[in-house]
Image (cartoon, rainbow, N blue to C red; front, side, top):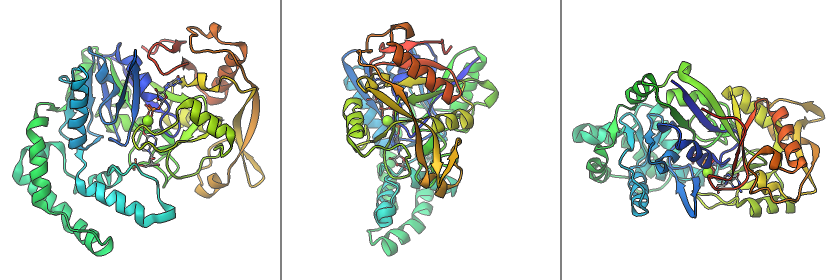
Length: 427
Ligand code: GDP
Ligand code: IMO
Ligand code: MG
């Protein structure tokens, strides 16, 4: 039975948390497949607002089983504090399942993340400083520590010791920092083991059995397509695969099981951290989008860079993810502009380019070619159907759909669960 993927079509913060939560009530499992607590997913239920970092947004739907897949990097201290924070607010988290194969973020990953950024100076990536990149680097380097290692002290000690051999040399000799002791890390991490043990399982088997039994599995991406380490604006990316292929490797669910790939698409564009952003606005309009859209990071509190909608990026997201649908978010934020520019192509050194350039230098030189669509001034936050939207808002959605290459199956008109126009069913 169907597995659905829900992922960011731009540079993250498109509203994945809200979309996942909305679908969470109708699916059996919600699984995070990559990233870690670099994510910040906001879910608004009634008058309650939740900020989730590591836990799948499905955790707020009582019927749904939330899963942390093997592709995620887990900071156990963050995991436990996020769980207790939710418990204090009356959310039942007991159904959570965590893959024993997921890798752990350790204090040395966070230290290396921060000092590397500091040494990069002006060339820094602008990471979230959560140790994500170094933890994935260790995974690929085969010196990572996995969740299952917490339950075998001797293996944990050997692995931490091996991982720290070269890291301590680098920390002390290159970065002028203090060495990290194996004992300290092992002691701290053994302290988490018993609190986490009850959640750990073979999540690949669990999810495939569930699919065979006709259950519905929703795979929730963190970050977004342009932050993908393979398909994004490298090197200004995260260190995992938020694109749809990552949903397979990060869960152990094969591509033949996936029936829908839903791209979450903001009605304009934002980006946090460094890197090229052709439609970025450094003027009053950018400030207005930031203020009205509340574009401040959920994880780091940084101002998000804001700009107009970029159809070249949306088309690219359709292509590299095989998107079947879009969920357009934050249309309400665009209320009040007389006309709304939409980037339809790039001008790169005098050439008109319709597709995202694979060459980094070209992308750095890309200037947006805008078409101007008429705006609207009516409040749209109560709209329940497309027909409730002003004509110009309907035309804006239609134009984005035509430019982006996949149907827009839902439209967000406010942060709340119910502030959504459902155009086509996802299930
Ligand atoms: P995520 O990382 O993709 O889950 O997105 P974030 O939670 O970081 O940022 C999206 C923000 O937009 C959150 O504050 C959401 O509550 C809010 N949001 C989501 N959809 C809508 C929408 O349709 N309209 C408005 N006004 N806000 C929305
Ligand atoms: P959600 O899931 C927006 C960005 C960081 C930085 C780059 C690398 O809420 O959409 P990292 O710490 O991952 O090594 O940082 O990626 N970044 C995000 N930007 N939303 C996110 O998550 C992000 N997670 C990472 O700002 O530019
Ligand atoms: Mg976010």
